[in-house]
Structure formats: C-alpha cells, structure tokens
Image 1: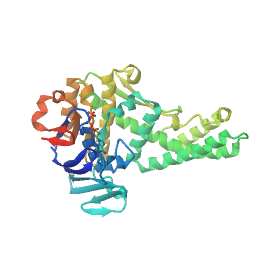
Image 2: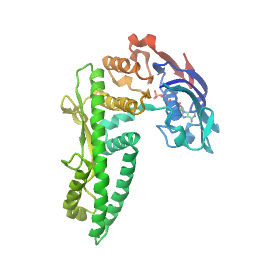
Image 3: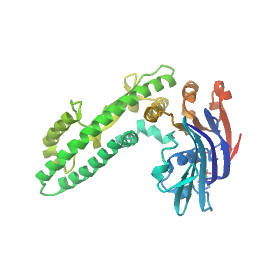
Image 4: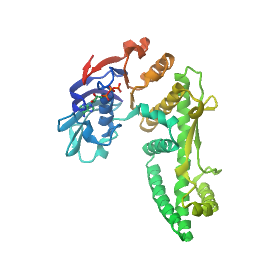
Length: 365
Ligand SMILES: Nc1ncnc2c1ncn2[C@@H]1O[C@H](COP(=O)(O)OP(=O)(O)OP(=O)(O)O)[C@@H](O)[C@H]1O
C-alpha cells in the first residue's frame, strides 16, 4: 500500500500543504516544534479518522480557524483511491473516492498504518496494564470475536466485583458469573497465547535484523492463571474449578483475584529480562520489533503491507541499528520517519528516499 500524496488545509501548524511522497522512504527533518510529528499525525488521521496524540479533534484545527482537512491518494495492489477527511465544530466528514460516507466505520480500513511513537517504549518499560491494552488492541484488530469476548468478560467482571463488595455475598450469583467468566476467559487466553506466539515469530526475526544478529528476542505470554488445557472446552472447565478454589479468598478481599484482567507479557533478549536489565537502546529495539511485527500480521490478514510511521526513533538507536532498521523495512513497506538531524540517516539509502526539510509548518524538498 502506498500513500502517493497528501493535501492539508489548516491542519495543526500547516496552513496549506500539497506533497507527493516517495514510494519507499520519506524522511521529515527539522528542528524541534516545526511540524514533523504534525505531518505524521495528519497521515495517521487520514487513515484512522483519529489522532494518536489527542482525543480532542478540535486541537487538530489550526489556531483561529474553523475547519481542517486532510486529503490523500492511495494505491493498493488492486485500486487507486482518493480519501478525504475534514474536521470542524460540527464533527468529521469523510469521503472515499469522492463519495461522502455516513459512518466512519465505512471510511476506516482503506489506508492501513502502523505507527511507532516514543510512548510505545512503554510496551516494554511500562506497567502490565499498558501491555494488556496493547495486546487487546492488536488482537481486536485481527479478530472481531476477541473484541466481543473481551467486552463480555469486562462486563461480567465488573458485576462480579460489585457482588464481591457486598456485605452478604450472594454465592449463587457469583457461581453463575464465574461460569460466564470461564467461558469468555478461555477464549481470551487462547487467542492471546496464539497472538504472542505469532508476534514472537516475526519480532524475533526483525530484532535479529536490527541488532545485526547479535540479539535473540523472545516474547512470552504470562497468563495470570496457570493452565494446562490447549483447547477452549477443556480450559473453560479448568478455569471454573480455579474460580471455585479462589472464591473464599476473593470474598475476603472483596475483588476478583484471578483471570486475564491480570495477564502480562514479558520480553527477553538472549535470555535476560529486557524490562529489568535491557539498555535504553535494547528496550527501544524490542518495542520497535514488536510493533514492526504488526506489519507482518496485517500483511497476513489483508494481503498487503500497511504504511509505517516512525516518530523520532532514530535518535536513540546507534548507526548500525538505524541502518539495519531502514534497509530492512523500506523495500517492503512505505515508511515515513521524523528526525532532527540528517546525520542520523545512513548514506547508503540516500538515493532511494525523499528527504523533506520541515520549518514552521512549511516543507522544503
Ligand atoms: N492547532 C494548532 N494550530 C497551530 N499550531 C499548532 C497547533 N497544534 C500544534 N501547533 C504547533 O505545532 C508545533 C509542534 O509541531 P510538532 O509536534 O509536529 O513538532 P516536531 O517538529 O515533531 O518537534 P519535535 O522534534 O520537538 O518532536 C508547535 O509549534 C505548536 O505550537
């Protein structure tokens, strides 16, 4: 999938911008606060009709203006498609192939993106909650069943926690809820396990490429419940028994103590735990490899690579890692990278890319 061009109007600090992109690698270079991330954000917005930085669309509109728009043209292996999205005080309007769509769900999905932003380091460094959010987002993108199971699980879990907080706990009710939880949890756990195995397969290869074969990455699912079953029915029965065993402790504590709401993932390089022992560069390479594995998952799913947005990743990688990163992806995936300095860029790839200088919301080719 290629984003051929973009046209912005009153988007963040861009009054107007009309740009053609290189099919392989586009690098946005500029000092701090010039509009590099804003430009990546406009591409992300064009793809997903939301920003990765704010939930308030109003912030995307240039100061003192009423409306912002982003238009783009994409080429996939089977089509050439104009997309257009605008945001104003009245909300968002989206067009696919010049035709307005009534629901954003009809718009999203035409342009697929994977974004790596500095915050993504938290997939490795942050709390288990951040990793659960990551795994839920990723599994949800691949499987609608997963989204339904997760939302069912969360609803029943909230009910169970309410019952557990009451003075006289209704054990019959808790039993009924535990049965439902065991059903949802068994599917969630097996999907997560499958997802982590697939991510590991791809991330391991990517990590080895970026680290020039020096580091072997392992990604491990750390379910909160120890289980043996490998298929849904058997796991459901195992979980029911475990929920029963834990009931007295849960009543004592007034909350649900076991289940996928307490799962985690762990990352290892050459067998040491990256979160505890990894250097900044190793943690960043790990987070990056895991995110880049998403490119392969999406390609598996839709038969086409998404485009890749890399916000400020080069500065924390040494030259070898930078060059392995850029050379390994650019032949498969159209990539957009922000950086503050041209010296960050490997000279071997200079002739197969477009470097764009960004200054105060304007672009110099
Ligand atoms: N709605 C808006 N209207 C006008 N200008 C805006 C708006 N939102 C942000 N800006 C301006 O955009 C600039 C920040 O741009 P951006 O976040 O893209 O920086 P950057 O070039 O990626 O910098 P860094 O290297 O520091 O990450 C700031 O000067 C900010 O004032």
